[in-house]
Length: 188
Image (tube, rainbow, N blue to C red):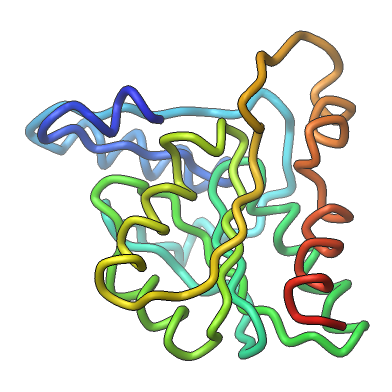
């Protein structure tokens, strides 16, 4: 993400499920200009309804409404964020879960609204915390709506091979870790 975001005019996307992946590929084909699509290798549940899903480059979607914290995720981490949102609701924390497939161009309106209404933002990505979704969101918020942000992603370290689900847990990219961060962030 970091390298691709730095290329002028490049669209950068990371779809969250099979339905969104096919829609993103179609949108990339129809788009005039460079597009980078990143797909996770782990099978994830399909949560979009193919018959009603409308995909648009540069637009995110609210999957769960909430007001205590906004969890903004992309790719494989959207499913983890959905599961974390459910667990947080049981713990009395109202989490807004947002799927932000397109990192560039960023859906600024959606991110700013979530920051203004929730007052706290957590970003979740299967990528380094350097240069990806977390930095894109943090950059926007630092200029237009200063808001506390916690970034969940791979810290400044090399990755390695292994079973995908085990690697997500090892690198702190799981619903359980999102819940821990959100509880600490919200003081609950």
